[in-house]
Amino acid sequence: MVYRAGPYTTEATGAVKVDGESIPRRTLAAKDGLRTIPEEGVETVYDILRHSATKYGNAPALGSRKLLRTHEEVKKTKRTIDGKEKSVDKKWTYFEMSEYRFMTFEEYEQMAFHCGAGLRKLGMQKDDRLHIFAATTPYWLAMAHGMDWG
Image 1 (cartoon, helix red, strand yellow):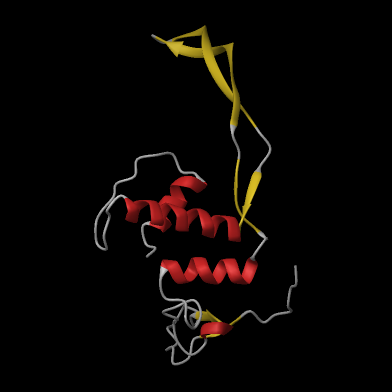
Image 2 (cartoon, rainbow, N blue to C red):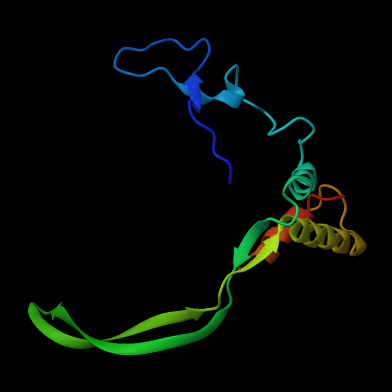
């Protein structure tokens, strides 16, 4: 990874000094005003996916782990019940997870595009709504991004 030496920020152009406060600071990339798009030509979710896949290619984009096993243990803990300290059993649950598996920017882009193509094939149109009820995973995210494709 390449790091550059500071400064990383600058005082906001045209900011008025207020007693007791510092002048607001901005990143050097937006020193003359707030940015409305991350980069020229990147204005939609589709553009972000295309740009990221082109720029970062086979670099890791998203990581996830699978649940291998759930372990439960019962341990004695002290609790105050009716004003008296008592030793009670408490069940503890631990999760054994796999190693991280990373998806590249290119793989993620393709997954999101396939999700979007599948939704189109099912008859979804622009401005249709889809409710997703699921645990947060790269697959859920790809479906959400795929909804904005096409």
